[in-house]
Length: 325
Image (cartoon, rainbow, N blue to C red; front, side):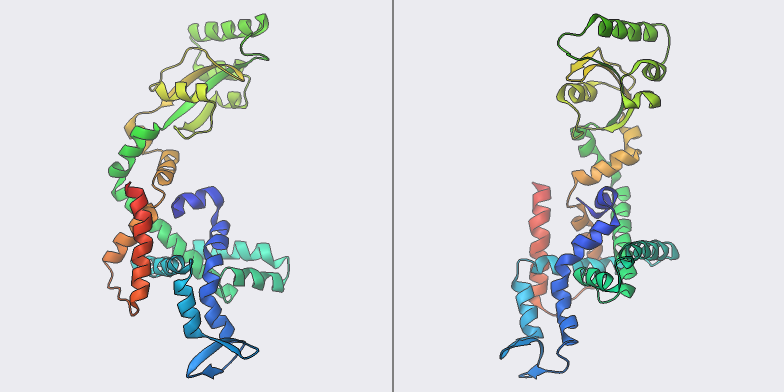
C-alpha cells in the first residue's frame, strides 16, 4: 500500500506511530550520547556502558546495518532526503504539517509531559519541535506520488480498470426471512417495485419508497464498487457484469432479493473518480518505491559507505521485483 492510500485508510497518526518505531534504533546513537557524555574507547564514542562492557557508536552503526531492520531504516532516511530535495516547501505544505503535528501533540498532552516525551521517543524523535518536519516529509512524499500518478495515469489506470472493473452501483432490496422461500407479502412487494419502475418512476425514487436498506434514503446508492469490494458473491458478480445504466433482474442473496443498477462504469468516468484512483493506489502496493527511485535519479546522491547503497538497492529490488511479477 502506498503512502497516499495508507493516509486515506488509517490517517496520518498511524503513519508516524508505525514508520518511526523502527527508526528509534537509528536515533539511539544520538540519544545515548547524552547519557554517557564524552566517554570514548580506542577513540570511538561509547553509547552504552555496563559492567565493563562498552558499545560504541561504530558498533551500533554496524549492528543496525546488519540487522533485519537495516534496509528499512536506510530506506526511510533515503525517502526523507529524496522528498525534501524533490518537492519545494510551500506555505501550504508547512501549514498542513504544523496542523497535523499540533493535532497529534494535543492528543498526548492530556496524559502529561512524560507520556508525550515517551511517545516522541518511540517515534524516533528527540523533541516535539521535530514532529512537523517529519509530517512535512510525508506530505511531500504524497505530493510526489500524486504527481507521478497524474503523469502516468493511463498507463496505471488501464490495467487496474480491466482487472478490477470499478463502477458505481445502486440497489433496491426486498428483505426476506428465507430467501429460498419468499412469503406472499414479500413477493407482492417485489411486484410493486416492478410496477413502479414500469410506470416511469426513477430507480432512485423507487429505492426511497420501497428498499429495505439504509441506502434507501440516498436513492439506493451504494457508491464505489470493484472486484475487491466485500459484497456477497451473487451481488458482486452481477454488479460487475452490468454496463452503465443497465439494471439486473432480481438477484437472490442471503438478505433477500435485489435489483441492481450500475450508474457509472465507463473508462473516462472512472478515471476521474476519486474513489477509483484511491483504489488504484492499492492495486500498485509498491508504487511509492518506483516514485522515490525515479525521483532520486535526477538528484546528485553519493554514498560514502557501500553497505548503505547495497542495502538500499536490495530493498528496492526485493519489492519492485514483486510488483513486476
